[in-house]
Image 1 (cartoon, rainbow, N blue to C red):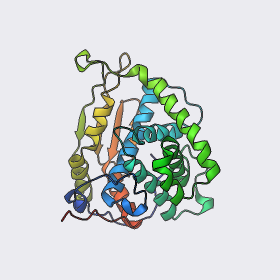
Image 2: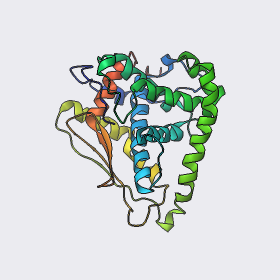
Image 3: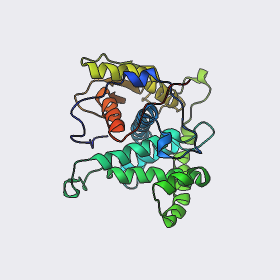
Image 4: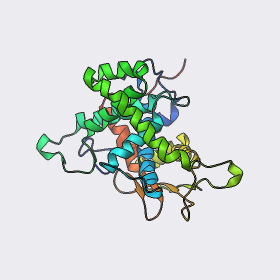
Length: 281
């Protein structure tokens, strides 16, 4: 994820309030923007970003052919994994929608300054791709989301076969690469490391992602898949990078989450008006 929101805020938000508050998913029936609290905005966005990078990893390690932009394919993988299912209510994916829409809304870039040539889509386009796939996966549950984001009716109709195609594509390539029973030891080895941070803001970010175990959750997902010959390990690292980012390194087989990105996501959430979840009475 390389396209950054430039000049949104001059300082980072302290994340201690997020760690102190409980975290609960918003009910999927309440698809109103107000149902997304700041905690879910941050955590859902981080989950999406990390799954996006995992999508890059699968394309790389399994030699999955991609027709079109790989960045779009990685977004589609993350949406597929986070969409409504037996284990997901889609709430975190909606948080990722809010992230992309907020990036576009609060960007100071003019239309002429937008990187139309970039390998990534424009922020709002990425958000609406998620909306479309979520709606196509479960039109009844995600109908209110499509309504409040003004997804046109004719586009909604095409989202259904598009989501089915996305589901079939990822299942076709990944179903043959699921790990067998744990004792077979054919699933990816996924060590997790959080490097210490120097700045106070990044220390708060490091504490938050460790408390939420965002890398450990990604590791559990990756371990479900069988490693190709000679590629047994994927490393997950949280660290300071000097810039807000998250990325897959094909040379090192590493997914890196930069603490600066955590602060940026929180800052964007605050600027967009998302509030911390109220404490339980």
